[in-house]
Length: 206
Ligand SMILES: O=C(O)CCC(=O)C(=O)O
Image 1 (cartoon, rainbow, N blue to C red):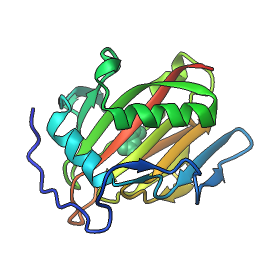
Image 2 (cartoon, protein in one colour):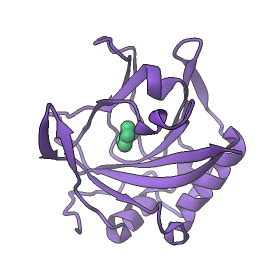
Image 3 (cartoon, rainbow, N blue to C red):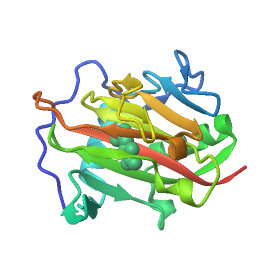
Image 4 (cartoon, rainbow, N blue to C red):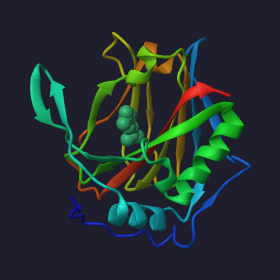
């Protein structure tokens, strides 16, 4: 499926992709004594070229999901490389390598989500890898439009933290974040261009 997007590259983030090995500007948000989120603005420079590469080459699909007991089309597109890792675009493989070095887990699975406009979203959830492993870390790199990324404690309706990751920003969730916290990218009625999140997960520690 080739997505039909109202995509306008930013004038500020051109050039070849470059990852910031120094993680300059990274700040840790301590959610509680078991969970944390690292936020590193501008970790990936040249993110527009990665957006364009993925928009034109990834194998986009729209999955079916169960929401409120109904089988519906997921309100976003996704693409992944977990079974054919050798075809992962090199810049995504480099992200995995750098993140594995920093966080001491083997980041070996890459999925990309495409929020075509403000009506695309992902509902409150904790990632399912929490069901098969302890304290999974999940890293996301945003490309394209800035969207809200919210966190709340599981079982609470109160938004505890709001991030607004923009193009090139890295968010890493760790500790018990997938088990004891939930996150969402909500819909917005504001006019907003397309956004992608590169979502990087690990199956083991190093
Ligand atoms: O798009 C994002 O930043 C979050 C994606 C996410 O939570 C997921 O795919 O599980």
